[in-house]
Image (cartoon, rainbow, N blue to C red; front, side):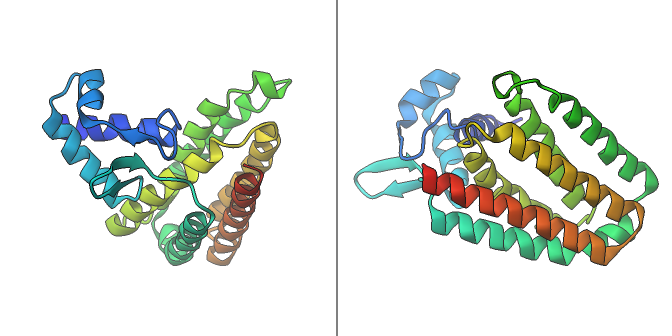
Length: 217
């Protein structure tokens, strides 16, 4: 893997996980030193992150982690709905029984985490990783590279908001897992209309939760 790609992935993960905070000023020399890279790959990686909307630059001021704004999140979820609506029939056409069962197995692993007796014992970070894998694999079943790329870029913004969820993360995740199971049922039934409906319901509930989180924040 090229140094630029390594720097990109390191910073992207830090931004998504809020280790680099919204609005934080990014010093290329400092980042390079912490990652063990020269300045050049860090600058190139920042350009890639800027293209995804995860960082912004102000002339003669510097480069900053993008704020998490309500208008931005509205646009992200609207775009996600359009992608999911378009790929649903393609997914139904492409998906194999084995791929469906692989997705179902992923949900079983997620469900194990939801058995946590209290919110404080819930491994939310691991659950979010599995949740992201579920959606990435689902959209990946379309085998449409451009939609997969767009969805992955949107997912980064959605994950940032989810890291802001506080005391109700376990409750939200339990409900989300139930919605995932209904998506699996639609896949097993090879039902395009049902898949579209369940994906839409899931996305809109996530959208509502994200907006409530931003308002509370």
